[in-house]
Image (cartoon, rainbow, N blue to C red; front, side, top):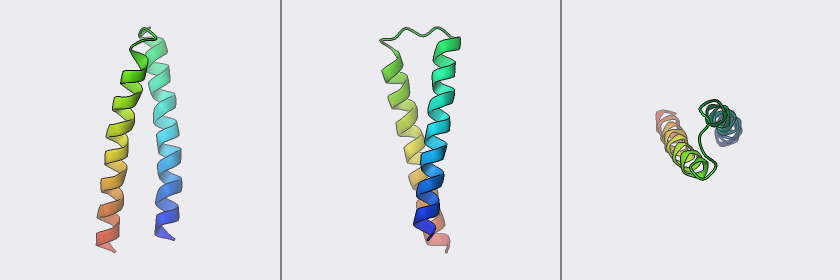
Length: 61
């Protein structure tokens, strides 16, 4: 049950972060060739954050 909640939350959170990253790229007029690096970096960092959140919750329960 906990895993399902965390996965759904994580997918929605990553989707929202990607939407905000896209808005940032458009507002700052970041060139198209630099955008994949920005998205990759942010997605990796957010994924690390979400995995550590899951591990913390898993061991707290």
